[in-house]
Length: 250
Image (cartoon, rainbow, N blue to C red):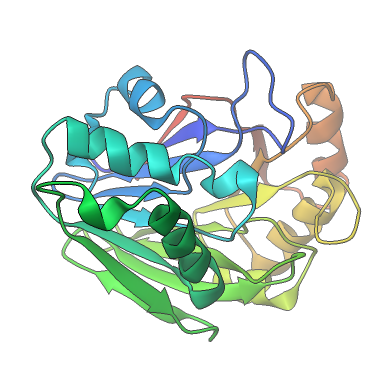
């Protein structure tokens, strides 16, 4: 069964129980990793995923708490003998910088290095990322400190849908991405420039008429019942505080 695993749920300051927010969507053939931090080899193993089975990597924006481990993932996969191409998606702002970092590592000189296919996404609403029999992935710009994208993923086999806000202020783009989704995954860093509070995440879920709200990218020191109660001030549906290695069946 296709499912999503929260590999991390913290804001930029993790703790022993919460890694920085990143996710993986696991289908029969597709393994879509969304952002890449920490030690990807170990975290994926903890989630029961072989790193070499990752087919696609999507980077939401170029901040360290979302992309810092991309070089490690690329190198570890190479050292483990990967030969299959890895498809890498993101805005030009993000992928241009990833390429520059990898050039410092002289990745083009690594012997027998597998193909990395770079796909620069347009800054358009509901831009198609990729689609196959398992999932259709779309991206829209959101409102953060640097160019960033939120996601909508549709699953043809089950008819289910999810949206992920990424790091963003409350914005109409996320409302449109999340229209009537079964699952809205929304950040809850706090009401500040480029971010959203739990109450603001709830308001977005209510406007989008989302079935269920999952809160991520929160301060691990904040009591979970407080974050949930704040979201319920503005949203009457089901609210869940996501935790590391939690699954959602899709």
